[in-house]
Each structure stands twice: as structure tokens, then as C-alpha cells.
Length: 263
Image (tube, rainbow, N blue to C red; front, top):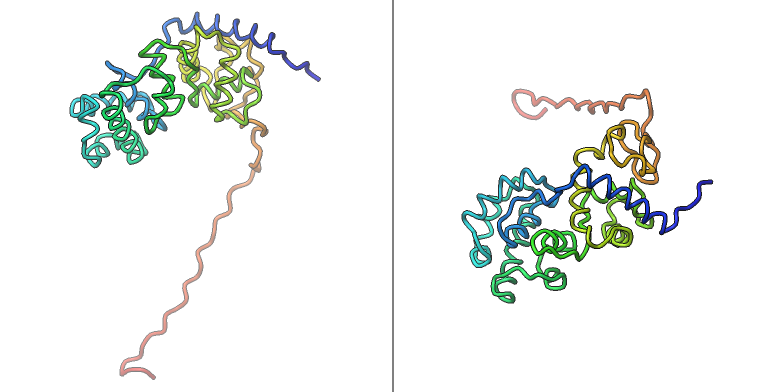
């Protein structure tokens, strides 16, 4: 039975992982294009269940028409929905953007606050979005950004060990904050996101070319699709079978009405 890794050992392994990521992604930063804290806030809200590429196509159009919190707070939701529709979940995102803008206007003079507590009061803003804004725009390391990429990579690296699954962002963030030096929190989140997109992909991670493979307990264990946590690859599928084709129900013949009326 393998010896359980101690916290001190995990911290030492994390240092080696950081060194490897530094070599590969020395300038890792947020991929969302922005020129203000508000633009970054809105772009991060739009990025949920979407791609940065798509968001970067939409935000210039949105900000050209609604350049500040005041204009967003008084915007017609239907017009916002039409613009951001390609990012998905456009109705809920519109509610969050307009709602956040109204709070900014009413309580913060239209400015994005630079602290976690106030950011979390904004509609549509949870810790991930707040960490992006604080770390990227205000250069404050208040936490580690945990999106789908970070959750997946942290899980495979076993840097987080007590979480339910790769989507348990709250516990994963807490455990990453325990082993990653605070000065690296913002950069580390962005670097792991880049690594998750480039190398440690969801379906087929490229372990042979991974710069941190030697410190990854999961390296080389993937065959095709990565197995979900706690489940063997291929579970639930039966090899060699084809799915049964449901036969259409035979239609009952219609009775023809005889000429001259009912019999």
C-alpha cells in the first residue's frame, strides 16, 4: 500500500510543479481582453460555460454600446441578451451583469470595489470571478482562481485531496492556498488554466510532453478519455455491443368510411 503523502511532502512537490510551470508559462495571465476593472468583471461573468475566444469576440461589441456601469445599469435587458447570446446562458448572465452594474452605481459610485467582501455582494459574482478581478486587475492575491481546468489539473496532480470531485471549487481552492505560496496565487491559477488547455486536456492529456509529469501521480495513466474520479475508464459501457434500435410501433389501420354514410 502506497504511503500517504504528508502536507510537508505535498508542499515540496508543489514547489517543483511551480518551477516546471514557470519555465513553460512564465508570463501566464488572464486571457480575457479588458481595459478596466468593470470590463474584466463583465468578461469573467460571460466566460462561465463559454470560451475566452468567444467572450473576446462579444465584449468589444457590448462595451462599445455600454462603456460604464451607469449605461449597463439602465440598459434594456433584451438588447444585452441579443449581444451576449453566443456565450450561452444569456438570460441569467444579463441579470447578473445588469444587477451588478446597479449595485455598483447605487453603492460604489460606479466603481468596481477592490476587496473580496464587497465583490461578493454583486449579483453573479462568486469567489472565482472575485479572484480574477482582484488578482488580475488590482494585483491582490486573495485566493486561487478555480475553473474547470484548475479543478481538473489540481485533482490529477493530487494537490487537492479532500474534495468531492474536480468541480468542488471551494475545497480545491482552500487546499491550493495551503500548498501554493501566496505570492504565486494569481499567476498559478492562470498558469494551470493554460496548462489545462494546452497539455492536461480533459479527454486525452499529453503526458509525454508534460513539463510536470514527473511530479504528477496521474501521469501516464490515461488511455483515451480520462476516467472520472472514483470510476474506472470504460465503466458503464459494454464492448462489442451496438445500441438496440427501437422499432416503431405499427400503425393501426384506419377504418374507411363507406360511400353513402355510416353502415
